[in-house]
Image (cartoon, rainbow, N blue to C red; front, top):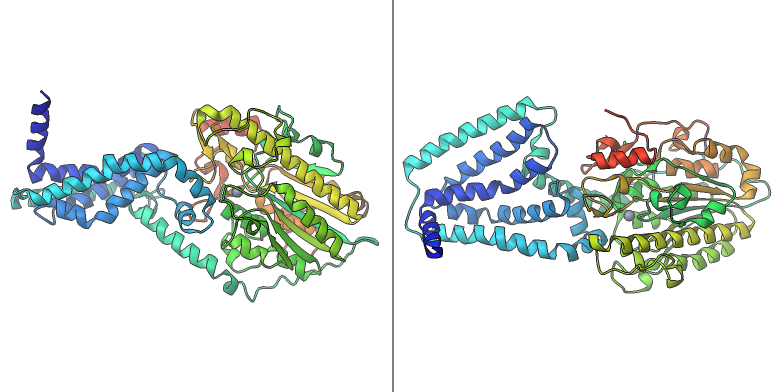
Length: 571
Ligand SMILES: [Zn+2]
Protein backbone atom coordinates (compact mmCIF):
# COMPACT_ATOMS: atom_id res chain seq x y z
CA UNK A 1 0.00 0.00 0.00
CA UNK A 2 2.78 2.37 1.03
CA UNK A 3 4.71 1.52 -2.11
CA UNK A 4 1.73 2.30 -4.29
CA UNK A 5 1.25 5.73 -2.77
CA UNK A 6 4.88 6.69 -3.21
CA UNK A 7 4.88 5.34 -6.76
CA UNK A 8 1.72 7.27 -7.54
CA UNK A 9 3.22 10.47 -6.11
CA UNK A 10 6.39 9.91 -8.12
CA UNK A 11 4.40 9.26 -11.29
CA UNK A 12 2.30 12.39 -10.69
CA UNK A 13 5.43 14.47 -10.19
CA UNK A 14 7.13 13.17 -13.30
CA UNK A 15 5.24 15.55 -15.59
CA UNK A 16 6.30 19.21 -15.84
CA UNK A 17 2.64 20.28 -15.92
CA UNK A 18 2.09 19.01 -12.40
CA UNK A 19 5.36 20.46 -11.18
CA UNK A 20 4.34 23.80 -12.71
CA UNK A 21 1.13 23.88 -10.65
CA UNK A 22 2.96 22.72 -7.57
CA UNK A 23 5.55 25.53 -7.85
CA UNK A 24 2.74 28.05 -8.36
CA UNK A 25 1.07 26.75 -5.20
CA UNK A 26 4.31 26.79 -3.18
CA UNK A 27 5.09 30.34 -4.33
CA UNK A 28 1.74 31.65 -3.17
CA UNK A 29 1.74 30.06 0.31
CA UNK A 30 3.05 33.21 2.13
CA UNK A 31 0.37 35.32 0.41
CA UNK A 32 -2.34 32.86 1.44
CA UNK A 33 -1.20 32.87 5.07
CA UNK A 34 -1.05 36.70 5.04
CA UNK A 35 -4.52 36.77 3.46
CA UNK A 36 -5.93 34.69 6.30
CA UNK A 37 -4.08 36.46 9.13
CA UNK A 38 -3.55 40.11 8.13
CA UNK A 39 -6.60 42.32 8.46
CA UNK A 40 -7.68 43.72 5.06
CA UNK A 41 -10.91 44.06 3.06
CA UNK A 42 -11.95 41.03 0.97
CA UNK A 43 -11.39 42.75 -2.41
CA UNK A 44 -7.89 43.83 -1.38
CA UNK A 45 -7.27 40.30 -0.11
CA UNK A 46 -8.28 38.79 -3.46
CA UNK A 47 -5.97 41.22 -5.27
CA UNK A 48 -3.14 40.39 -2.86
CA UNK A 49 -3.33 36.76 -4.01
CA UNK A 50 -4.40 36.85 -7.66
CA UNK A 51 -1.91 39.50 -8.84
CA UNK A 52 1.22 37.72 -7.53
CA UNK A 53 -0.18 34.28 -8.45
CA UNK A 54 -0.70 35.49 -12.04
CA UNK A 55 2.84 36.88 -12.11
CA UNK A 56 4.37 33.63 -10.81
CA UNK A 57 2.30 31.48 -13.14
CA UNK A 58 3.39 33.69 -16.04
CA UNK A 59 7.06 33.71 -15.00
CA UNK A 60 7.21 29.93 -14.52
CA UNK A 61 6.21 29.56 -18.18
CA UNK A 62 9.42 31.23 -19.31
CA UNK A 63 11.16 27.85 -19.40
CA UNK A 64 9.88 24.48 -20.56
CA UNK A 65 11.40 23.17 -17.34
CA UNK A 66 9.87 25.44 -14.63
CA UNK A 67 12.45 24.16 -12.11
CA UNK A 68 15.03 26.38 -13.83
CA UNK A 69 12.88 29.45 -13.05
CA UNK A 70 12.52 28.35 -9.42
CA UNK A 71 16.31 28.21 -9.06
CA UNK A 72 16.66 31.62 -10.75
CA UNK A 73 14.15 32.90 -8.17
CA UNK A 74 16.22 31.50 -5.29
CA UNK A 75 16.21 34.87 -3.39
CA UNK A 76 12.41 34.75 -3.41
CA UNK A 77 12.39 31.20 -2.08
CA UNK A 78 14.70 32.27 0.77
CA UNK A 79 12.61 35.39 1.49
CA UNK A 80 9.49 33.20 1.58
CA UNK A 81 11.12 31.04 4.23
CA UNK A 82 11.94 34.12 6.34
CA UNK A 83 8.41 35.42 5.93
CA UNK A 84 6.91 32.10 7.04
CA UNK A 85 9.12 32.10 10.14
CA UNK A 86 7.87 35.59 11.04
CA UNK A 87 4.28 34.65 10.39
CA UNK A 88 4.71 31.83 12.84
CA UNK A 89 6.17 34.23 15.43
CA UNK A 90 3.82 37.20 15.08
CA UNK A 91 0.99 35.63 13.13
CA UNK A 92 -0.05 38.60 11.07
CA UNK A 93 2.55 40.71 9.42
CA UNK A 94 4.88 41.01 6.50
CA UNK A 95 8.61 41.41 7.34
CA UNK A 96 8.64 44.86 8.94
CA UNK A 97 11.12 47.72 8.59
CA UNK A 98 12.01 47.39 12.27
CA UNK A 99 12.86 43.72 11.86
CA UNK A 100 15.37 44.47 9.13
CA UNK A 101 16.82 47.29 11.25
CA UNK A 102 17.05 45.06 14.29
CA UNK A 103 18.80 42.38 12.27
CA UNK A 104 21.26 44.79 10.68
CA UNK A 105 22.05 47.00 13.67
CA UNK A 106 24.90 45.98 15.91
CA UNK A 107 22.73 46.44 19.01
CA UNK A 108 20.13 43.93 18.01
CA UNK A 109 19.09 43.12 21.55
CA UNK A 110 15.45 42.62 20.68
CA UNK A 111 16.23 40.42 17.68
CA UNK A 112 18.84 38.33 19.48
CA UNK A 113 16.36 37.55 22.21
CA UNK A 114 13.99 36.15 19.67
CA UNK A 115 16.63 34.15 17.87
CA UNK A 116 16.83 31.52 20.61
CA UNK A 117 13.11 30.91 20.26
CA UNK A 118 12.93 30.91 16.51
CA UNK A 119 15.75 28.46 15.89
CA UNK A 120 13.37 25.49 15.82
CA UNK A 121 10.90 27.34 13.60
CA UNK A 122 13.67 28.17 11.13
CA UNK A 123 14.67 24.50 10.91
CA UNK A 124 11.06 23.40 10.36
CA UNK A 125 10.43 25.95 7.61
CA UNK A 126 13.69 24.97 5.94
CA UNK A 127 12.95 21.22 6.08
CA UNK A 128 9.29 21.42 5.09
CA UNK A 129 9.23 24.37 2.70
CA UNK A 130 12.54 25.68 1.36
CA UNK A 131 14.34 22.35 0.89
CA UNK A 132 11.41 20.46 -0.77
CA UNK A 133 10.82 23.40 -3.15
CA UNK A 134 14.46 23.42 -4.23
CA UNK A 135 14.63 19.61 -4.53
CA UNK A 136 11.54 19.55 -6.72
CA UNK A 137 13.03 22.32 -8.85
CA UNK A 138 16.20 20.27 -9.24
CA UNK A 139 14.08 17.26 -10.17
CA UNK A 140 12.19 19.34 -12.76
CA UNK A 141 15.50 20.20 -14.42
CA UNK A 142 16.54 16.51 -14.50
CA UNK A 143 13.47 14.81 -15.99
CA UNK A 144 12.88 14.36 -19.71
CA UNK A 145 9.39 15.85 -19.85
CA UNK A 146 8.91 19.46 -21.08
CA UNK A 147 6.01 21.92 -20.96
CA UNK A 148 4.28 21.90 -24.37
CA UNK A 149 3.76 25.10 -26.37
CA UNK A 150 -0.01 24.60 -26.29
CA UNK A 151 0.08 24.37 -22.47
CA UNK A 152 2.27 27.46 -22.20
CA UNK A 153 0.04 29.54 -24.48
CA UNK A 154 -3.09 28.44 -22.64
CA UNK A 155 -1.66 29.27 -19.23
CA UNK A 156 -0.20 32.54 -20.39
CA UNK A 157 -3.74 33.60 -21.28
CA UNK A 158 -5.13 32.32 -17.98
CA UNK A 159 -2.38 34.15 -16.06
CA UNK A 160 -3.16 37.36 -17.92
CA UNK A 161 -6.86 37.01 -17.09
CA UNK A 162 -6.04 36.33 -13.45
CA UNK A 163 -3.80 39.39 -13.39
CA UNK A 164 -6.53 41.64 -14.81
CA UNK A 165 -9.12 40.35 -12.34
CA UNK A 166 -6.65 41.00 -9.51
CA UNK A 167 -6.03 44.57 -10.68
CA UNK A 168 -9.79 45.13 -10.94
CA UNK A 169 -10.31 43.77 -7.45
CA UNK A 170 -7.52 46.03 -6.15
CA UNK A 171 -9.15 49.05 -7.81
CA UNK A 172 -12.40 48.30 -6.00
CA UNK A 173 -10.61 48.83 -2.69
CA UNK A 174 -8.17 51.50 -3.90
CA UNK A 175 -8.43 53.48 -0.67
CA UNK A 176 -6.93 50.76 1.45
CA UNK A 177 -4.97 48.83 -1.16
CA UNK A 178 -1.47 49.55 -2.41
CA UNK A 179 1.17 47.36 -3.99
CA UNK A 180 3.89 48.46 -1.56
CA UNK A 181 1.73 47.64 1.45
CA UNK A 182 -0.44 44.73 0.41
CA UNK A 183 1.27 42.57 -2.17
CA UNK A 184 3.88 40.15 -0.95
CA UNK A 185 6.82 40.14 -1.75
CA UNK A 186 6.61 43.76 -3.04
CA UNK A 187 5.83 44.94 0.52
CA UNK A 188 8.70 42.95 2.06
CA UNK A 189 11.10 44.42 -0.51
CA UNK A 190 9.75 47.94 -0.01
CA UNK A 191 10.32 47.52 3.72
CA UNK A 192 13.90 46.43 3.04
CA UNK A 193 14.44 49.57 0.94
CA UNK A 194 12.84 51.71 3.66
CA UNK A 195 15.06 50.13 6.32
CA UNK A 196 18.25 50.72 4.34
CA UNK A 197 17.25 54.33 3.69
CA UNK A 198 16.49 54.84 7.37
CA UNK A 199 19.80 53.34 8.46
CA UNK A 200 21.44 55.83 6.12
CA UNK A 201 19.49 58.77 7.58
CA UNK A 202 20.42 57.68 11.10
CA UNK A 203 24.06 57.58 10.08
CA UNK A 204 23.88 61.03 8.48
CA UNK A 205 22.16 62.65 11.47
CA UNK A 206 25.32 64.48 12.65
CA UNK A 207 25.55 66.09 9.19
CA UNK A 208 21.86 66.87 8.64
CA UNK A 209 21.45 68.37 12.12
CA UNK A 210 24.84 70.13 12.24
CA UNK A 211 23.59 73.66 11.66
CA UNK A 212 20.56 73.38 13.91
CA UNK A 213 20.24 75.56 16.99
CA UNK A 214 17.41 75.93 19.51
CA UNK A 215 18.25 79.56 20.43
CA UNK A 216 17.30 78.35 23.90
CA UNK A 217 17.40 80.68 26.91
CA UNK A 218 16.46 80.49 30.57
CA UNK A 219 15.16 83.93 31.60
CA UNK A 220 14.16 83.06 35.18
CA UNK A 221 16.35 81.37 37.82
CA UNK A 222 15.09 79.77 41.03
CA UNK A 223 15.39 81.98 44.08
CA UNK A 224 18.92 81.62 45.55
CA UNK A 225 19.24 78.11 44.18
CA UNK A 226 20.80 76.01 41.50
CA UNK A 227 18.39 73.92 39.48
CA UNK A 228 18.76 70.21 38.74
CA UNK A 229 16.47 68.36 36.37
CA UNK A 230 16.56 64.63 35.78
CA UNK A 231 14.90 62.74 32.94
CA UNK A 232 14.82 59.02 33.71
CA UNK A 233 14.08 56.89 30.67
CA UNK A 234 12.56 53.59 31.76
CA UNK A 235 12.66 50.33 29.84
CA UNK A 236 9.82 47.86 29.19
CA UNK A 237 7.78 48.91 32.22
CA UNK A 238 4.03 48.54 32.01
CA UNK A 239 1.72 50.71 34.07
CA UNK A 240 -0.64 47.84 34.93
CA UNK A 241 2.17 46.22 36.93
CA UNK A 242 2.63 49.28 39.19
CA UNK A 243 0.68 49.31 42.46
CA UNK A 244 0.75 53.11 42.13
CA UNK A 245 -1.55 52.54 39.16
CA UNK A 246 -3.73 50.00 40.95
CA UNK A 247 -1.91 46.68 40.51
CA UNK A 248 -2.81 44.15 43.21
CA UNK A 249 0.81 43.24 44.11
CA UNK A 250 2.71 45.89 46.00
CA UNK A 251 5.41 46.85 43.51
CA UNK A 252 5.85 50.62 43.97
CA UNK A 253 5.54 51.36 47.72
CA UNK A 254 8.17 54.11 47.64
CA UNK A 255 6.59 56.09 44.81
CA UNK A 256 3.24 55.84 46.57
CA UNK A 257 4.67 57.52 49.69
CA UNK A 258 6.49 60.27 47.80
CA UNK A 259 5.25 63.81 48.31
CA UNK A 260 5.35 66.18 45.35
CA UNK A 261 4.51 63.43 42.87
CA UNK A 262 2.20 63.83 39.88
CA UNK A 263 1.56 60.69 37.85
CA UNK A 264 -0.40 60.27 34.67
CA UNK A 265 -2.83 57.38 34.63
CA UNK A 266 -3.73 57.42 30.95
CA UNK A 267 -0.28 57.46 29.39
CA UNK A 268 0.61 55.51 26.28
CA UNK A 269 3.70 55.33 24.11
CA UNK A 270 3.96 56.39 20.48
CA UNK A 271 6.04 53.32 19.62
CA UNK A 272 6.59 49.82 21.06
CA UNK A 273 10.19 49.80 19.83
CA UNK A 274 13.04 51.30 21.90
CA UNK A 275 14.80 52.70 18.86
CA UNK A 276 11.73 54.65 17.76
CA UNK A 277 10.23 55.48 21.14
CA UNK A 278 13.30 56.91 22.89
CA UNK A 279 14.18 59.40 20.10
CA UNK A 280 10.62 60.77 20.46
CA UNK A 281 11.15 61.08 24.22
CA UNK A 282 14.48 62.85 23.75
CA UNK A 283 13.52 65.29 21.00
CA UNK A 284 10.82 67.47 19.52
CA UNK A 285 10.01 64.67 17.05
CA UNK A 286 6.73 62.83 17.46
CA UNK A 287 4.71 60.21 15.60
CA UNK A 288 2.89 63.16 14.01
CA UNK A 289 6.16 64.62 12.74
CA UNK A 290 8.90 62.02 12.95
CA UNK A 291 11.16 63.20 10.15
CA UNK A 292 12.24 66.36 11.98
CA UNK A 293 14.32 63.93 14.03
CA UNK A 294 17.02 64.14 11.39
CA UNK A 295 17.11 67.94 11.19
CA UNK A 296 17.02 68.94 14.85
CA UNK A 297 19.15 68.21 17.88
CA UNK A 298 18.03 66.54 21.08
CA UNK A 299 16.75 67.88 24.38
CA UNK A 300 20.31 67.70 25.71
CA UNK A 301 21.45 70.45 23.34
CA UNK A 302 18.41 72.58 24.26
CA UNK A 303 19.43 72.45 27.96
CA UNK A 304 23.07 73.02 27.06
CA UNK A 305 22.21 76.15 25.07
CA UNK A 306 20.21 77.41 28.06
CA UNK A 307 23.32 77.25 30.25
CA UNK A 308 22.87 73.84 31.90
CA UNK A 309 25.72 71.42 32.44
CA UNK A 310 24.43 68.26 30.72
CA UNK A 311 25.04 64.62 31.62
CA UNK A 312 23.85 61.29 30.19
CA UNK A 313 24.30 58.15 32.32
CA UNK A 314 23.29 55.09 30.34
CA UNK A 315 22.89 51.52 31.56
CA UNK A 316 21.99 50.03 28.22
CA UNK A 317 23.93 49.00 25.15
CA UNK A 318 23.04 51.62 22.55
CA UNK A 319 26.30 51.87 20.63
CA UNK A 320 25.82 52.96 17.05
CA UNK A 321 22.19 54.00 17.49
CA UNK A 322 20.68 57.44 17.06
CA UNK A 323 19.94 57.44 20.81
CA UNK A 324 23.63 57.19 21.65
CA UNK A 325 24.36 59.95 19.12
CA UNK A 326 21.92 62.13 21.09
CA UNK A 327 23.72 61.26 24.33
CA UNK A 328 27.02 62.29 22.80
CA UNK A 329 25.66 65.85 22.68
CA UNK A 330 26.02 65.94 26.50
CA UNK A 331 28.97 67.53 28.31
CA UNK A 332 29.44 64.21 30.08
CA UNK A 333 28.36 60.86 28.62
CA UNK A 334 28.78 57.84 30.84
CA UNK A 335 28.16 54.64 28.89
CA UNK A 336 27.90 51.96 31.57
CA UNK A 337 27.43 49.24 28.98
CA UNK A 338 31.09 49.71 28.12
CA UNK A 339 32.10 48.74 31.68
CA UNK A 340 31.68 45.03 31.17
CA UNK A 341 31.74 42.54 28.32
CA UNK A 342 28.56 40.57 28.72
CA UNK A 343 25.88 39.74 26.19
CA UNK A 344 23.10 42.19 25.40
CA UNK A 345 20.93 40.49 27.96
CA UNK A 346 23.30 40.98 30.86
CA UNK A 347 23.92 44.41 32.25
CA UNK A 348 24.64 46.05 35.56
CA UNK A 349 21.63 46.52 37.80
CA UNK A 350 20.17 49.99 37.48
CA UNK A 351 21.30 51.04 40.98
CA UNK A 352 24.84 51.14 39.57
CA UNK A 353 23.77 54.47 38.03
CA UNK A 354 23.39 56.08 41.49
CA UNK A 355 27.06 56.66 42.44
CA UNK A 356 27.65 58.35 39.08
CA UNK A 357 24.60 60.52 39.56
CA UNK A 358 25.79 61.47 43.06
CA UNK A 359 29.23 62.36 41.72
CA UNK A 360 27.82 64.56 38.95
CA UNK A 361 25.52 66.36 41.39
CA UNK A 362 28.48 66.96 43.74
CA UNK A 363 30.97 68.00 41.06
CA UNK A 364 29.03 70.37 38.85
CA UNK A 365 28.16 73.85 40.01
CA UNK A 366 25.27 75.75 38.52
CA UNK A 367 22.29 74.30 36.73
CA UNK A 368 22.36 70.62 35.81
CA UNK A 369 20.38 68.46 33.40
CA UNK A 370 20.83 64.72 33.62
CA UNK A 371 19.36 61.94 31.50
CA UNK A 372 19.40 58.51 33.15
CA UNK A 373 18.73 55.65 30.74
CA UNK A 374 17.88 52.52 32.70
CA UNK A 375 17.52 48.86 31.73
CA UNK A 376 14.36 48.64 33.87
CA UNK A 377 12.33 45.52 33.19
CA UNK A 378 13.91 44.35 29.98
CA UNK A 379 13.94 40.58 29.47
CA UNK A 380 15.47 38.49 31.09
CA UNK A 381 13.44 39.89 34.00
CA UNK A 382 15.11 38.04 36.88
CA UNK A 383 18.50 39.45 35.87
CA UNK A 384 17.29 43.03 36.31
CA UNK A 385 17.44 43.16 40.13
CA UNK A 386 19.70 42.01 42.97
CA UNK A 387 18.54 38.97 44.96
CA UNK A 388 17.36 41.03 47.94
CA UNK A 389 14.63 42.36 45.68
CA UNK A 390 13.37 38.87 44.82
CA UNK A 391 10.24 39.46 46.90
CA UNK A 392 7.89 37.53 44.62
CA UNK A 393 9.04 33.95 44.13
CA UNK A 394 9.65 31.60 42.40
CA UNK A 395 11.12 33.98 39.86
CA UNK A 396 13.54 31.94 37.79
CA UNK A 397 12.60 30.42 34.45
CA UNK A 398 14.44 28.96 31.51
CA UNK A 399 13.62 31.19 28.59
CA UNK A 400 10.19 32.28 27.45
CA UNK A 401 7.42 29.74 27.77
CA UNK A 402 3.74 30.20 28.46
CA UNK A 403 4.02 27.44 31.07
CA UNK A 404 6.43 29.62 33.06
CA UNK A 405 4.14 32.65 33.00
CA UNK A 406 3.67 32.89 36.79
CA UNK A 407 7.42 32.85 37.39
CA UNK A 408 7.94 35.40 34.64
CA UNK A 409 5.32 37.66 36.23
CA UNK A 410 6.98 37.27 39.63
CA UNK A 411 10.34 38.23 38.19
CA UNK A 412 8.73 41.11 36.30
CA UNK A 413 7.05 42.34 39.51
CA UNK A 414 10.40 42.22 41.28
CA UNK A 415 11.99 44.29 38.50
CA UNK A 416 9.31 46.96 39.05
CA UNK A 417 9.94 46.83 42.79
CA UNK A 418 13.60 47.50 42.04
CA UNK A 419 12.76 50.35 39.64
CA UNK A 420 10.69 51.84 42.47
CA UNK A 421 13.78 51.67 44.69
CA UNK A 422 16.11 53.21 42.10
CA UNK A 423 13.70 56.09 41.40
CA UNK A 424 13.36 56.73 45.12
CA UNK A 425 17.15 56.84 45.44
CA UNK A 426 17.39 59.34 42.58
CA UNK A 427 14.86 61.51 44.40
CA UNK A 428 16.83 61.12 47.64
CA UNK A 429 20.03 62.36 45.93
CA UNK A 430 18.14 65.34 44.50
CA UNK A 431 16.56 66.18 47.88
CA UNK A 432 19.93 65.98 49.61
CA UNK A 433 21.47 68.35 47.06
CA UNK A 434 19.22 71.14 48.34
CA UNK A 435 18.68 72.27 44.76
CA UNK A 436 15.46 73.31 43.10
CA UNK A 437 14.84 70.02 41.35
CA UNK A 438 12.47 67.72 39.57
CA UNK A 439 12.58 64.25 38.04
CA UNK A 440 10.47 62.98 35.17
CA UNK A 441 10.23 59.22 34.69
CA UNK A 442 8.46 57.25 32.01
CA UNK A 443 8.91 53.95 30.23
CA UNK A 444 9.69 53.72 26.53
CA UNK A 445 6.98 51.03 26.04
CA UNK A 446 5.36 48.09 27.79
CA UNK A 447 5.60 44.33 27.30
CA UNK A 448 3.57 41.22 26.58
CA UNK A 449 3.98 38.40 29.09
CA UNK A 450 1.63 35.62 27.87
CA UNK A 451 -1.23 37.76 29.17
CA UNK A 452 -4.16 36.32 27.24
CA UNK A 453 -5.21 33.62 24.81
CA UNK A 454 -2.86 35.03 22.20
CA UNK A 455 0.12 34.01 24.38
CA UNK A 456 2.19 36.91 23.13
CA UNK A 457 5.51 37.86 24.67
CA UNK A 458 8.13 40.67 24.63
CA UNK A 459 7.56 43.86 22.60
CA UNK A 460 8.48 45.59 19.30
CA UNK A 461 6.08 43.36 17.33
CA UNK A 462 4.73 44.87 14.07
CA UNK A 463 1.26 45.11 15.61
CA UNK A 464 1.20 46.35 19.21
CA UNK A 465 -1.05 45.26 22.06
CA UNK A 466 -2.54 47.12 25.03
CA UNK A 467 0.24 45.61 27.13
CA UNK A 468 2.96 47.18 24.99
CA UNK A 469 1.30 50.61 24.92
CA UNK A 470 0.23 51.55 28.47
CA UNK A 471 3.23 53.05 30.29
CA UNK A 472 3.97 54.56 33.70
CA UNK A 473 4.66 58.30 33.48
CA UNK A 474 5.38 60.42 36.54
CA UNK A 475 6.97 63.69 37.62
CA UNK A 476 8.37 64.41 41.07
CA UNK A 477 8.88 68.03 42.21
CA UNK A 478 11.12 68.98 45.14
CA UNK A 479 9.86 71.13 48.02
CA UNK A 480 11.93 74.05 46.76
CA UNK A 481 10.61 73.61 43.25
CA UNK A 482 7.04 73.63 44.51
CA UNK A 483 7.80 76.75 46.55
CA UNK A 484 9.36 78.62 43.61
CA UNK A 485 7.12 77.34 40.79
CA UNK A 486 3.88 76.27 42.51
CA UNK A 487 1.77 76.78 39.40
CA UNK A 488 3.78 74.20 37.37
CA UNK A 489 3.20 71.53 40.02
CA UNK A 490 -0.48 72.45 40.18
CA UNK A 491 -0.88 72.20 36.39
CA UNK A 492 0.74 68.77 36.43
CA UNK A 493 -1.76 67.65 39.09
CA UNK A 494 -4.63 69.17 37.11
CA UNK A 495 -3.64 67.16 34.05
CA UNK A 496 -3.02 63.81 35.69
CA UNK A 497 -6.19 62.13 34.45
CA UNK A 498 -5.88 63.42 30.88
CA UNK A 499 -4.76 61.26 27.97
CA UNK A 500 -1.03 61.85 27.44
CA UNK A 501 1.68 60.38 25.30
CA UNK A 502 5.47 60.15 24.99
CA UNK A 503 5.58 63.13 22.62
CA UNK A 504 4.93 65.40 25.64
CA UNK A 505 8.24 64.69 27.40
CA UNK A 506 10.47 67.09 25.45
CA UNK A 507 8.06 70.01 25.90
CA UNK A 508 7.29 69.17 29.53
CA UNK A 509 10.97 68.98 30.51
CA UNK A 510 11.66 72.38 28.90
CA UNK A 511 8.59 73.84 30.60
CA UNK A 512 9.60 72.47 34.02
CA UNK A 513 13.06 74.03 33.60
CA UNK A 514 11.68 77.36 32.34
CA UNK A 515 13.62 77.10 29.08
CA UNK A 516 12.37 79.19 26.20
CA UNK A 517 12.91 78.23 22.58
CA UNK A 518 10.87 78.42 19.41
CA UNK A 519 10.85 74.60 19.40
CA UNK A 520 8.92 74.36 22.68
CA UNK A 521 5.17 73.80 22.38
CA UNK A 522 3.38 74.70 25.64
CA UNK A 523 0.26 72.88 24.44
CA UNK A 524 2.24 69.65 24.78
CA UNK A 525 3.70 70.48 28.21
CA UNK A 526 1.95 68.68 31.09
CA UNK A 527 3.07 71.41 33.49
CA UNK A 528 1.64 74.25 31.41
CA UNK A 529 -1.91 75.55 31.59
CA UNK A 530 -1.93 75.65 27.77
CA UNK A 531 -1.77 71.83 27.64
CA UNK A 532 -4.22 70.47 25.08
CA UNK A 533 -5.80 67.03 24.81
CA UNK A 534 -5.42 65.63 21.33
CA UNK A 535 -5.89 62.32 19.51
CA UNK A 536 -2.98 60.11 20.37
CA UNK A 537 -0.95 58.84 17.48
CA UNK A 538 1.13 55.74 17.03
CA UNK A 539 4.20 55.61 14.80
CA UNK A 540 3.66 52.89 12.20
CA UNK A 541 6.23 50.75 10.44
CA UNK A 542 6.74 53.35 7.69
CA UNK A 543 7.16 56.12 10.31
CA UNK A 544 3.72 57.55 9.57
CA UNK A 545 1.25 58.52 12.32
CA UNK A 546 -1.93 56.49 12.85
CA UNK A 547 -4.42 56.84 15.73
CA UNK A 548 -3.22 54.22 18.23
CA UNK A 549 -6.61 52.52 18.34
CA UNK A 550 -6.21 51.80 14.63
CA UNK A 551 -2.76 50.22 14.99
CA UNK A 552 -4.21 46.71 14.74
CA UNK A 553 -5.45 46.33 18.33
CA UNK A 554 -7.82 43.40 18.91
CA UNK A 555 -10.94 42.94 21.01
CA UNK A 556 -8.84 41.64 23.91
CA UNK A 557 -6.82 44.88 23.79
CA UNK A 558 -9.89 47.12 23.81
CA UNK A 559 -11.19 45.19 26.80
CA UNK A 560 -7.99 46.10 28.65
CA UNK A 561 -8.09 49.73 27.44
CA UNK A 562 -11.58 49.96 28.95
CA UNK A 563 -10.51 48.25 32.16
CA UNK A 564 -7.68 50.77 32.63
CA UNK A 565 -9.73 53.77 31.45
CA UNK A 566 -7.50 54.52 28.51
CA UNK A 567 -9.35 56.89 26.21
CA UNK A 568 -9.68 56.20 22.49
CA UNK A 569 -12.17 56.90 19.75
CA UNK A 570 -14.81 54.28 19.15
CA UNK A 571 -14.89 54.23 15.35
ZN1 LIG B 1 12.65 49.56 25.05
